[in-house]
Length: 152
Image (tube, rainbow, N blue to C red; front, side):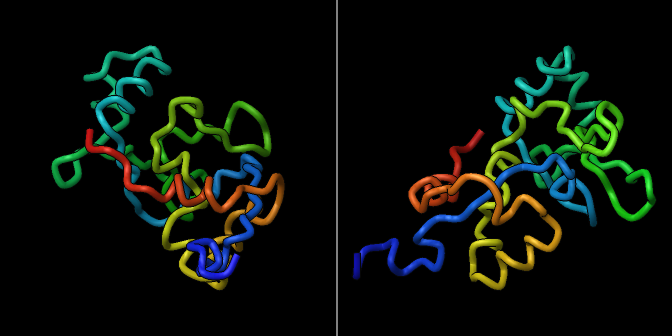
């Protein structure tokens, strides 16, 4: 409908995405995967760890908050998130805490930098084979995922 907010967004008809468990979103150059205390507690519980133990084994402080640690990837090409499991299923890269992963991870690939333009979406899609595949994610769902999350 002309004039509606959706008509002004290039992705107003929605976008397709299906996770292929390739791990490309969890590896590469150094990055930051921030998480709240609640998210950290859920990840710790998922791993059978106390919160302090989880932080000492899998997190680092950044700008007064917490981020998941990174480790060298097996090919030495970059860094993997400490939660990335490349061993359990050959040919797949799985998140060890998938049901309890941080909001930042839950919203991939619907990040503002990927939604800036069709070109930005295609550029991100060169690394992510799940983009433009699978079920349609509606404009309203994408906009909800883009909303700022509450503070920890």
